[in-house]
Every structure is written in C-alpha cells, then in structure tokens.
Length: 131
Image (cartoon, rainbow, N blue to C red; front, side, top):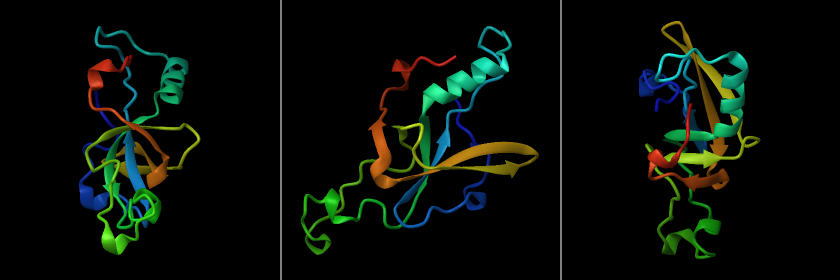
C-alpha cells in the first residue's frame, strides 16, 4: 500500500497550524497487482470509500485541549494523543480540507483534519481490502 506524497521531502510539505493534522491519503493505483488497468470511474469509487490516510504532520496544539484530559487542566495532565506521526488512520469523507501540491511534476493530494476528527487508528493494514 502506498500513500500520496511519500516522495515529497518533509520540509516541502505544508505545516499544519494549531490542532490540525496533515494526512497523506492512500494512493489510488493505476492498475491491479495482476496488471489490469483500473478505469477512472473505479478509481473515483475506491477513493470515495477509502478514507484511510497516513499521519504526516501534526500542529503544535494537537490534543492539548482539556477535552482530551477528561476535564483535568493541562498544567496537571499530559495530553493523551489519539494518533502520532506515521499512524494510519480512518477519517470521515466530509471531514477536513484537501490540498493538492506538486512535486517533480506529479500532483499529490493531501488533507488537513482537526485532531478530534480521527475515527480510528488502523494497526493491522492487512485487514483492509484495497484494489
């Protein structure tokens, strides 16, 4: 499984502000492992249902809101982050804001989401059924 913008150097990626998380969605392949070309309509359908991405960067305020502490003031608790950079997560399709960047002539789609919009962390990628 590959993710968008994997070849882009970290310093060239946009930096998430505040409580936002930068995600690199799963890259939609042009053909199956067996060499069959995937038509554009199937790629769009796969992309719509996938909503799986790798956490690329996190803003400095991620998971510092007291709601992540069970109401305990931050000066008496350590933030309990749900995710960290490198985790593969699931998010809602209507969540966040997409951005397209160019690197070496190729367009890469990234997405910003808020720290509280992560639906799940996927530890075992073998359970996912991708094209």
